[in-house]
Length: 333
Ligand code: KG4
Image (cartoon, rainbow, N blue to C red; front, side):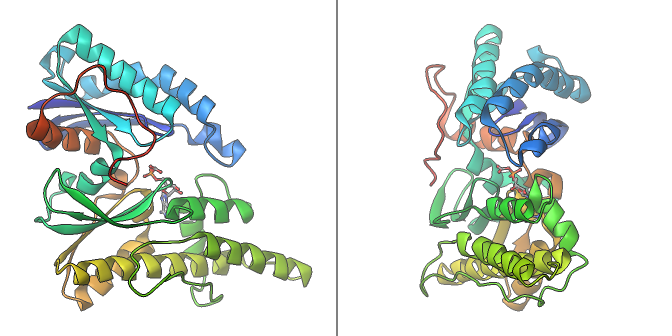
């Protein structure tokens, strides 16, 4: 089946063509340069950019795959969660395309895309698995039992992990998006230099909280400045990254143990982080767990994962009605 995937939930406009689960093209335009001067995504600017980019991006994806719109058998578009204005551009465009071309449409949950993105790689996990999804808008642990069944086991109570990376970058004067900037600085820093707090919450909790570690970084920077000491950005980044990585890895492994699952999968922009991936690999090896991570380009927002999740959702529940609307909060939690 030839599928056109369309993604516009935040600040990336993306389209991809998949033949079943083989990627024929994967096109993305990033708005980073527009939002970086504001230190974060400006929703109104994001939707205006999507309006300009959506049609050329879809045309480019078709051209790169060597296909025509008439060849497409299913349109899979992100329905939510995300910024409503951004979602509306991609989803309304997809509805219109579906209507005028008589191609069925499936609305895809962005979280389902991240949970399944690991299937875009050569090495594919078996169900059931535990999925840690960490991005700018979410941090959550799921038990995935099939392509369409995901049970939420824990989620952030405040900031998402990516949001914490972005806020720490901002307070250190690093540009948006902060995750890759912090990771770059951390590569030359000492992760043991500052002991930032790890929020384990209560013993059985699989929830996360990252606002404390972000505030601890702010307090550390302020305290250095009050003492006339120049804060060491590389050490701060490495120490902050280590605190976040440890909590993400240990809680995910604990979820696997508790549910007697032998496979751990990650997804979402933060899972592109090399230190987090390395710590997962090392700890999963010690705990006799299989570990799978998508290629970094499929960790961050992309339309290939939306096409893939749409393919499975369509075979499970058929096309959606064109009356269905976008949503800002995921029913998956
Ligand atoms: O999944 P994604 O592209 O978009 C959302 O749905 O949010 O994730 C973007 C988030 C941003 O917060 C960005 O700073 C973070 O992922 N990120 C990283 C890295 N690359 C992207 N965080 C830590 N380390 C990275 N290498």
